[in-house]
Length: 479
Ligand code: PLP
Image (cartoon, rainbow, N blue to C red):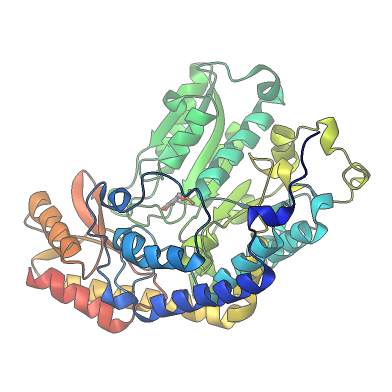
């Protein structure tokens, strides 16, 4: 007979041990934030450095948790690029904050898997509730609230949001045929601008449409926003060739330059063609907590789906993308599958939401806890102050750039992203970025605007103050 192995033999951490090590971890994180400015923003590690500091083989015997923390300092920290550093200006921010971290810790502690309402009713209902709260805070149109045919869900990322929006679009435009028979090559087309994030092309590949199904809408050379007349021309040409327009993805705050597409005009064209309109506002959308920035929401009352990431600029530790649909029927049509082992009375009653049907994976973490913690800790007032502070700092930086004849601004900068370059050209611009990044004092990234290199300075760390913005300008302008 098989011998019974008692749980103690595994060496689980006892509640007392957990309490002790947990306090040490929280202290470690608090100390890290206090000393964060002592680190170079961009990790100076060379490829392979981190692995070279790790044992080649896993331990046979369990090790004390103190050793994990010791190695975190010794081996891991040198390989960290410090996203929470006040002089991190690269990409878009990835805010992590006290309430979000603690909310995430509670989620880990509860360890629930909220795939169905029945597997933890609170995980589903809190998520529905905080997404209604967030829709209210951002003043999103009523069609996204959960009390009608629409509603919100937390996706892992904006990339997932674009993918599920595309799957819902294909369901709707094919009347459910794509789920049964797949996507016939050359039948459906998707439209988005040259400025849109690459995740939309990836979604086309994953959905089986292939990258060739993606049409790139030209942008206005000054605003870098998608041109409605070009969208119309692309759709007309596809229809004339017998193709079906499935989905248009508009950007509100495109990655390279922060460009904002004319959503009302694009929506009107998409609607007329029978295509789904998804808005990717991954970074910028959350700025609508500030009433003076609600122009970002223009036209949303006509769109089919909308995504913005609290895990970028709204203080919520990765991962947390808020995704809303105006009518969930197509999303559920695209993604629901009901094997026998998931059947349960609550689902069959039709009275509950099962979020597994709103996303690609089955399993899901209790991510609403961290968003709930953030919204409650900061309140609308705190959220507005956070966004407004960064917008003001970006305007300050842009005024430095505008006043220096060696530099030029290359895109509108109404939020917290400033895109600029040296008039001396691409080589000089990129060399300047490399010098700043290698110094460790600040970190910024680049893009192409109208075919020419430009630097992006994205303000978004919770610790960034005027002195950090003035310091990065001093570095850039002294080089
Ligand atoms: N969309 C936009 C506009 C973005 O800026 C980004 C990332 O910066 C993404 C999508 C991808 O974000 P995620 O990592 O949430 O998929």
